[in-house]
Length: 279
Length: 318
Image (tube, rainbow over the protein chains, first blue to last red):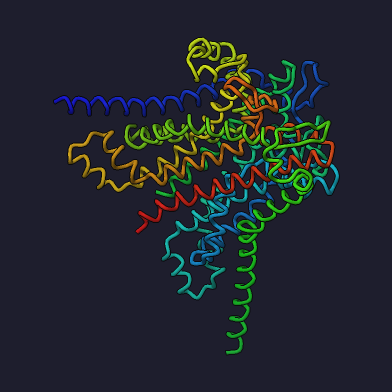
């Protein structure tokens, strides 16, 4: 009887520990999101979006330059990263299935997803910023593109592999060439999934800070020219949160609130679509 | 006949063109990109490598921009310490979370809980850093760390870990923030592995009268061991390269921490804080050397995790 009791107690203890660790995760999630909401929401006002910053230490002003810069840099990254990512993804899914070398390449892409983003920033600095001689928004876009490509490759590859073999065979039976099968049949069928990968990639890069520190740098004025230094929300939040002024901290909270919820909504939507496709 | 041949040749030509374009993109992502990252980091750091020597750089604690003397030991050790502690906190919690998601949570709530844990991974790392600085650091500096000091100060050995003045900007806070960041990565890997365990194996154990915990401990965990190890190593790889979450709360002090309450620095913190300030070639080159070390370390760690994860996939993909 004693053994039975011991086993029961052990069972209860470990299952409770599992419950507690789940609560630990949820507590931090709601703690962080709650603080963002409480501290960020109340400082959101129209000035934040339509005004450039005032000189440090003065009250007021906004982060117009950071919002605009962030969108421009993210768009540059997406425009460069999406086609390369989708094309490489199609290759791995359709041509690279039986090739050993392609499989190694595909595994390297899996590794590149978790590659430290600050390293990418340093590399782009060496390849683009140093030769040109000054920071620029375009270099930030390139750094983000390099971070986004592996994400898109992986999702494209997975989503195209989900399309049943029979679909391809039917197309081949009609006399289609491989490229026609890939682009006009398989890619079309996997369209939603592939687009979801792009959203996932955009969500990933729009929260990045480290690669922008050495590439697009920062700017206190609205700048639409990608060959000049450009502000971004994340780098501005970094500068403002580390800075000494209360007004900076308030604006950092407000910007973080907007950024986080935009990123989370995008990534939840993408994950939901992918989950539904997989089942 | 002639027109058919012509059409066929055109189709074949088009096929070659499309295949080469796709192949080029794949080669770029799979080979050219990682290789050129390595080469450009190596090229930029060659000045420091020549000047200080590889072994000398890794074992030297110097970091003096005025005297132009640089060594990487301090940030390297800082990276290893914070990564080790964060993984130590995150590992049991992630396995616990995975068990909860797979075995304990009611079926209808599973997607909600899974999404909630995944949300933790979606929060940008700078938000973790800022929250750590504004919320967690003051709480730790004023409440938690003084309490820990009172409790453990006189305990031999452990007491040493809590020496120093509690500020909240230190190894302890950094490791905790870092661990919250890596929990979703590890728990999602372990969860997927648990889900791959064939139901029949669990049912056999239940039929023999095993309790839930015994099924988990003696059936599920042994079967998925290589995936759990893979997830663990993956989160180590993530923690090594994490920048913003760490930069806010580490303190950026170039010293090897002697207690959990000391401020310190890591490779990523040194890069983020000093890269744009590096005013001499050798200074910048030394920072690039640190980046190269980080890239090589995380590449091999992630490669190892990939191997571990592939093992389970092979085992069950019959």
